[in-house]
Image 1 (cartoon, protein in one colour):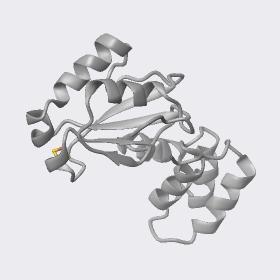
Image 2 (cartoon, helix red, strand yellow; image 1 turned 180 degrees about the vertical axis):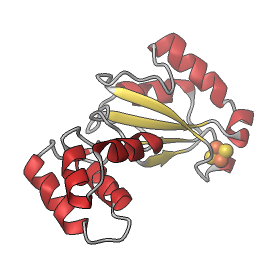
Image 3 (tube, helix red, strand yellow; image 1 turned 45 degrees about the vertical axis):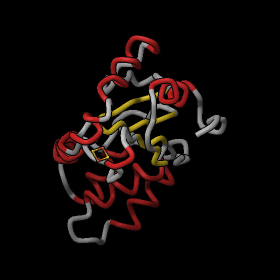
Length: 162
Ligand code: FES
């Protein structure tokens, strides 16, 4: 599980200062901020725009263009569920239905204050052991509906059996 620091303007300024010299620094900067804080806080936009002499709109545009960047703090647990062909053949869509029916969890539609976000990915390189899921960065194969729901409902630090 990635542990993120709480947003800290001074720390963000330090990160920006450390990477500003790179050519094409916008993406490395955004990645570094998201790695540290789990998202790109709105306060980071003016920091980046001043440091790189870009307009705020340009920085916003970059953040919204790349889907991996978050503008809100992430949910406490992130589950990436593979829905590519091999995992489809092994029942991943049944898992999606079970999460919705039994857990009220809508894949790819977590609200910002949700404790869990389940997101679709296409192939985790674990096709033979599907359905596959990545839970807080840990790959889990042959996941079944009950286990997946339990993982979604268990918070980091008390994950239960895998
Ligand atoms: S298709 Fe799901 S891990 Fe490859």
